[in-house]
Amino acid sequence: MLTKTAAVLTLALALAGGIAVAQQMPNMPGGHAGHGAPARASDSESTRGYRAANAKMHKDMDIKYSGDADKDFVAGMIPHHQGAVEMAKVVLRHGKDPEIRALAEGVIREQEKEIAQMRAWQARNR
Image (cartoon, rainbow, N blue to C red; front, side, top):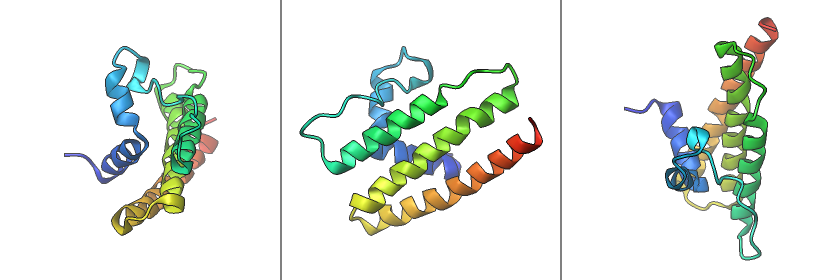
């Protein structure tokens, strides 16, 4: 069974089309290939928002690994969580379904808490 955070992240990625893309690109490290696909003239505003959030998230997740599993995890997860926040903001700007909007608000709230926790940990463990 997925944890609440994992379920929320899974839904956020599904909303952005990331799961389908990851499943289509199994040979790429981390299964995150294709998230930064170029914008198309026919893209809706929400699609452009998701593409931008995904591109920034994946660029920022491309960290210089230190060999310290804890530090590398936190360094990669902060932009990953920030990407979830940005995707949730897209659905709040463009989405209409009350259940999904409430879920997006929860994503923002929980991911921001975890980002703060990870940044505090980084500050203590430099």
